[in-house]
Amino acid sequence: MSTETQTVETFSEASMVAGRAKAIQSLNATVAEIAPTNIPVLIFGESGTGKHVYARLIHRLSSQSDSKFTKLNCSTADPAREFAEFSPRIRQSISLPQTIFLDALDELDLAGQRALLSVLPDAFSESQPDSFPVRIVSSTAKDLEAVVKSGHFRKELYFRVAGVCLRLPALRERKEDIEPMLEFFLRESSKALNKPVPVLDRQTLEILMGYDWPGNIRELENLARKMVALGETRFVAAEFQKPPQPARPVSFSTVRPSLKIAARAASREKERELILDALDRTKWNRKRAAQDLRISYKALLYKLKQIGSSETGE
Image (cartoon, rainbow, N blue to C red; front, side):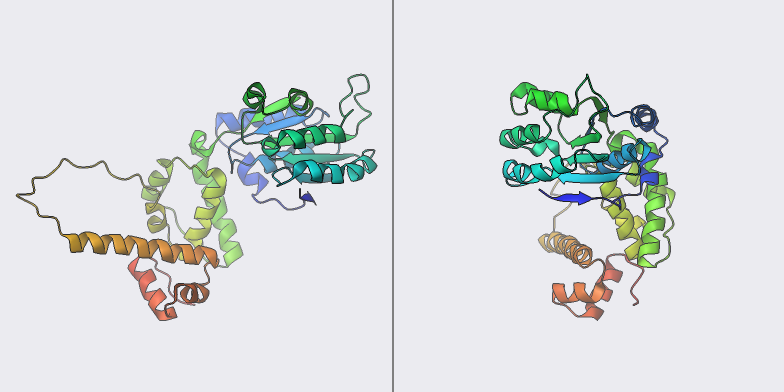
């Protein structure tokens, strides 16, 4: 299990928490109400929706905002053993105000859940609500209440951590926030990569609004980074476009398919994927990408022109 005191967020809190969507505004109102209390919070949301950011937000708005924020990653190979090893340390610091963030709590097996209960046996005594200075915030990508009913999560642990349950909406449920968040990520990526901010046109935005975003905000941030690195938006967004509906079958007597044309088209598409993957791996270092692809640097620049990138210089 990894233990860390977090000081830097993966995503900007401002870009994720501030939203136009009613679901986000309602969520933020609830967070403002519960953050000053010491009630344990369970944050439920798909991967990439910002569970860690909201855990930090709760800590920042709490009475313990000046104390430590400690993250425990529950997605480990042997959580029971590691919880047992961590137990003496957490007991030693149990009198110190802090927020403990149990990330990916749904990935704990039953043995790990039992070990966690042994670490925090008297965490939330109703008779002495202020005697335990540690605020517990947990995250889950699964509906833990349903997992409890299936017998794969301990009921007593669920009630220990789920004082209040917060559900983070997926990006497809808050599409009015896509444009302002993307513009923010474009500006941040431009600063990081020291490149101009690409201009978003209406056609590109329409493509992105029609996409379901299975990777949520993390996927949107990665898209912004790719747009800045390549120096354009429409070509990059094209891969998010829904495939056109298949046309009615055409008689083979009028149109004869060409195997060579189909093979060339498939080859070009595969080549494009390999190039973009290599650029992603090397963080858009084109010389390293060319080495990985086993082609010359000039050949890579030529191919980038072919697939639509307008930026080929150093």
